[in-house]
Image (cartoon, rainbow, N blue to C red; front, side, top):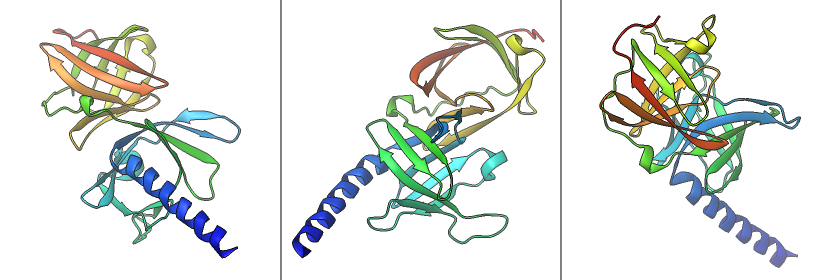
Length: 220
């Protein structure tokens, strides 16, 4: 009986070690949120990585304040704990690691029905270029549609396809990833700019390449 127990523990340690290796060597971005009823929502607007011996995360100001958050994962634990020194202004943030694969990470908040699915960010989408988008208007194109978009300086987004609506946007730079979070949409990762065209990628269900071609005159 003891031998079986030791073998089970040994296997568990190996699996945890392999899982952590895949998890800690990458940067993960929120893709979508779901639950046991298979209801789907857009993801937590959040990024998670492991750097210099500890967990780091950054999300939009609306949900996470503006500071980078730091956390820890205890030895052989399946939990990542951020903000362990809980305060009312800075509540504790805990995730249970459900699964880790080559390109996806599933986290669950304890006592919650929701699963938060993250996607691995490819190193090829890193960018150190200084690309300014605030206050500018673009023709937005990908393989599925074309639209015109305006990133207003007051952090509201306008689209020609839905003139009656505006939504918040926020830009985050995190470990050389340049990310635009738009409420009600998947995050855009800016990875290049050539001339008046910005190139970005989204990672929801399939990887989609986007072009934002700057307009020289106001169309609103």
